[in-house]
Image (cartoon, rainbow, N blue to C red; front, side, top):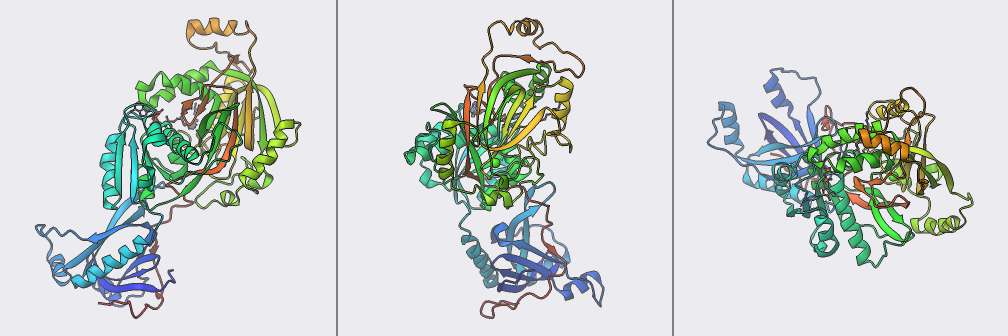
Amino acid sequence: MDKQPVLLCSRLFQKRRQADVTLSRTVLAWTETEKSRKRRTGISSFSGKAHSQAVQVCELVTVHKAEEDWTRRRKKKAKQVAELYPHAFTVSYVRRTQQHRWRCADVTFRCTSLALCERWIHVINERLSLLSNRPKSLLVYINPYGGKRRGKHIYEQKVAPLFQHACISTDVIVTEHANHARDHLKTEANLDKYDGVVCVGGDGMFSEILHGLATRTQTDHGVDQNQQDAELVPCSLRIGIIPAGSTDCICFATVGTNDPVTSALHIIVGDSQPMDVCSVHHDDTFLSYSVSLLGYGFYGDVQTDSERKRWLGPARYDLSGVKTFLNHNHYEGTISFLPAENHMGNPRDKLLCRSGCSVCQRGPPVKEQQWQLSEKKKTETDDGSGWSVVRGKFLAINAASMSCACPRSPKGLSPSAHLADGTTDLILVRRCSRLDFLKHLLRHTNKDDQFDHSFVEVHRVKKFRFQPWLQEPGSLEDLSEATKKTGFAPICSGQTPCSYSKAQSSWTCDGEILCHADIQVSVRCGLVRLFARGIEEQQPQQCVLDDPGPLSAPDPGQQHVD
Ligand SMILES: CCCCCCCCCCCCC/C=C/[C@@H](O)[C@H](COP(=O)(O)O)NC(=O)CCCCC
Ligand SMILES: Nc1ncnc2c1ncn2[C@@H]1O[C@H](COP(=O)(O)OP(=O)(O)O)[C@@H](O)[C@H]1O
Ligand SMILES: [Ca+2]
């Protein structure tokens, strides 16, 4: 129940009902009057609960004078109402539907006088103008070739009208080549004009935007990204993602659904979700940033193979996934990692990262720069003081800085990973039989624990390094002869580990292939913010209050009862 003082309160008409409408600082609520209800239902002594609805002011999209269509034929009753209450205003607001999807709903209130109607519009607009986190001006990049090549259409049909409705101005750039958006952000774009950047595309396109913004921010602040221990400056502009790619895991894992309208509404209401960003180096060379999956072995090979099949659209991943699975390559190397502190939880603790996540709010115990300095001393010695080392033969090495939930795997690669805790979940899948690997993969699609296998280990870490083992010449002969003929590595049946070692795989980094296998990775807590709020815990109904009880006394100076 809203205990805030009432700013405005009037008896208005909503649909064919008379309603008491109230606005407090944070809530717009309307309740059908008892008289109206009795008249409508025909029940004279009404003992049931009043049917009220309420919307948070921060989830209102806009308010405007209702456009009346006087040419429309109306029922007699509706005509009478329109005559008695000739002035109307419409409030658009966020309505939650199933599976974390949001829609823009409208409610129209009719008033007896123009002055009252305008007063309502004015007061609601005044409240909206106080919401300083809402963007007014956005720079939009559309990848016309992402996913099913529908980015432009999706933006024009579903998103642009909503931005216009919410009075957000936009500059739109349809990219003409790969890295167009990244380079434009890095050097050309006048970022002072904007409150955020919107990316229409998939994870690869998001990666471009992230690189453009993060690099621009470091350049502007004189930070050298090539230095592994440089303290990176957080990006001031938030990024919105309109999903129009093949996997769209960054959108799915931060919003709970891949739906352009939902994402547009999260942008409009000015949500803000900080996100961990991994910086990836090869010695003193900065390679890349990553927010979702850094994957070597299985996912790296899927990505490399799928690039050749781009023309297939999202289906390329199914084909490459099957091919890579059948190839069953394993890779040898050494992983060293710096585990996160115990209070940051662990990847198997089943504490899911949800909107307002308490683990993310705990954050790292000391400032990033401080731990970077202290850890630097440890890395110099690398004598086990903090760092752990694992050597072996792996089918996959994955670092998931967030759950990486996506429609293919609704709980994700690491279901309990956190969006902004300053850690990444390092998943090591050792060499095992095809059958076991298949069981592990299948568990990404159901409720079973994909880490509950003897050949899988998972660690929550702040930093890690990977050093591939270089293959001795000649050891690839068997594999290369077999694969030359069939395109696949030979399949062996049964439970025995039967996999073939190629010299090296590649790292996939948010869907982009890195040019080095030997990498060093550091997690930067909350380096970038998205127009998102994390996945909401449960799907609250649109605050349908059955019994709001008495509202707190209206401020007499501002009360308007008609
Ligand atoms: C036999 C059943 C196998 C089921 C395996 C399901 C596991 C799926 C986990 C997917 C995690 C995806 C993490 C995100 C990766 C994206 O960054 C990347 C690029 O996305 P985009 O730019 O939008 O194309 N997508 C992938 O790497 C797809 C992996 C698909 C693996 C089959
Ligand atoms: N106009 C363009 N032409 C070709 N490639 C582009 C263009 N704009 C962006 N790209 C690149 O397309 C790649 C895939 O984009 P993305 O939107 O992630 O789609 P998908 O999810 O299908 O991979 C990214 O690497 C991005 O750099
Ligand atoms: Ca994280």
